[in-house]
Image 1 (cartoon, rainbow, N blue to C red):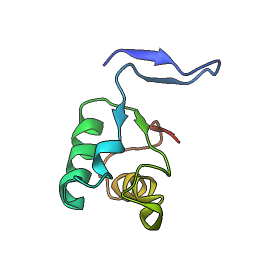
Image 2 (image 1 turned 45 degrees about the horizontal axis):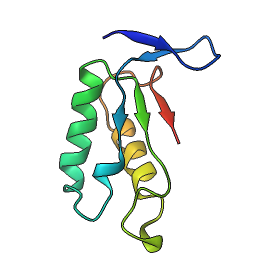
Image 3 (image 1 turned 180 degrees about the vertical axis):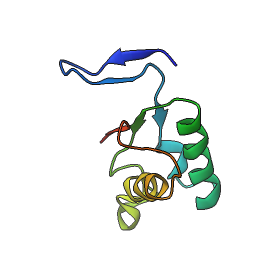
Length: 87
């Protein structure tokens, strides 16, 4: 996977990132499926994941996407130390 410099840092991230928003809106997939998608992306070289506290169904669901990304990274069998989470 091609990489790019992250802003004005010395950190490199994948040129293609994974956007988390569709995994947390009202039409979101089951959690297991969303985590499988995140793991697939990581397996294929994605090292940049975009999330936000507002990626949710409503105010009572706030931070759903951040919690989902966190859980997926916790349960990933590979190394996640190189993954950048933009929130």
